[in-house]
Length: 186
Image (cartoon, rainbow, N blue to C red; front, side, top):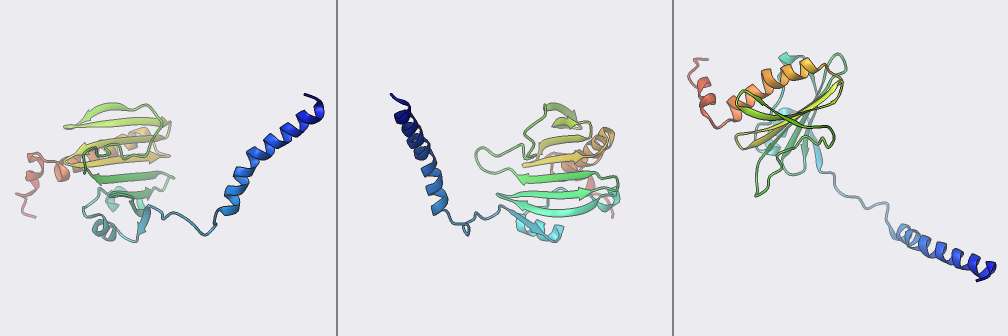
């Protein structure tokens, strides 16, 4: 094949490869978009009503400021907080439904997960960096996750074991642990 025919063949091949992309662009509409699966609510109460259960949250006394109350896709509550030292916390809750419910709702796809036992709950934890950590667990028909960024490991562990696991075992758990609160006079 001579150089001229080779050049024409190369040009034809390049044109053939570019035309489908150009054709797709010519027919695409900039006004077409998919609806976002994320809906933000102005308060915890509004998120709770929309999702149909009480998602896990961090009380004000913990010292973090609530930033967002999000409802993501099929029944996933995502509550986000910030701290005075730049900490960013994400707490997710979801009711387990269907044949194969998603038990890892953390949204974390990197890191090496390790199972540990806190209280009577098996928790999967991952250290994502020196100041970034994640955990997910199941309790009483619900899946939960907690992610902390820009925080000390001991602070993450303290919130996870001292608050989140304790609360989910007592409030969402199916064992008798929740009954200890029913006998209190206040």
